[in-house]
Length: 149
Picture 1 (tube, rainbow, N blue to C red):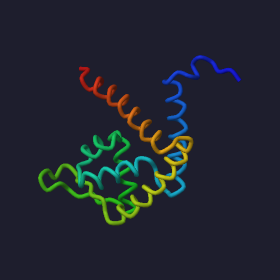
Picture 2 (picture 1 turned 180 degrees about the horizontal axis):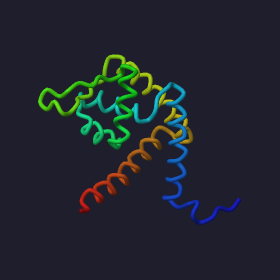
Picture 3 (picture 1 turned 135 degrees about the horizontal axis):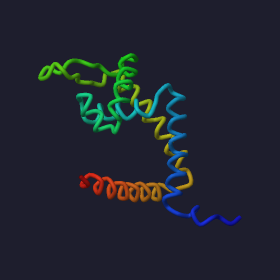
Picture 4 (picture 1 turned 30 degrees about the vertical axis):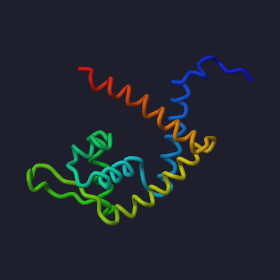
């Protein structure tokens, strides 16, 4: 079967793959009662430690309007704690709880399964190469975008 010229363009292939990846991640995390924002917030808190909501938003890439709801959901499940910042009582510091770390370990396992499903057609070396290439392309555009006024 012949394919149209656009079907071999990297931008089209990346878009189609990204849509498929998003579906797999959303469905896979929903199957264990979580969302992508939960995973991103818990990961950042685990890796970087307690953070203000603004810092957590920057590190996780979650827009502040979505971050408040995410923190509320995580706090309701006792996966994070929110406390006033002793240095500035106007802002909150968010901290991952032991239950949050246990949930993160479960989510890490689920995300690993999802990555394996998404990249099942590739060898481990090809997966590493794809990741390096995608990181390079993204960094190029992120660096270019950050220098634009």
